[in-house]
Length: 230
Image (cartoon, rainbow, N blue to C red; front, side):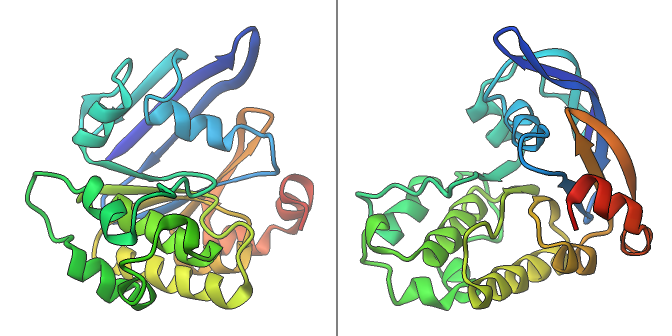
């Protein structure tokens, strides 16, 4: 569904990605893992057209994304939940959701988002700035779903959230995967990720240094210690 091949990217003269390759298949949940500063968010920004790439190809459902602006990438069917959530602070919960709603038909509506995250239903008239961190993350996920994507990308899905809120977010992600939505996840909760995801790619200094299934990763203590700090 998504194929990234030999991706290279840089900030100015500083190259960050060196030939990153991975793929996400229909209905699959895949993770990008690694310590901070290893190139995970740069990979996401490159996919979403938020920064130019220096080499390689990005293909979604057989169509190249190279060089497309972000709005065209979103129109192609990729939904992003960005690092830091980035909800609109001066819009209400409802307005945040409606602002990103896609014109194309799809299963995601206001009421379905509120069913996924009942806490938001009770806060629909509150401004984004009035929400807790967990509620903002739920809103960011709901906002991406309102584009009715065929694939969802979550960058630091539960960073900085309380344990109970993380459980709620992962419950929602499991439900989305069960519905058949393809998902690319960046996060650090290895226990939750190996339960939810099918495959994993580990980045180290802008390169893929390991890839494999959940059972392989759980059993490979060397990879966990050397590249993930577990």
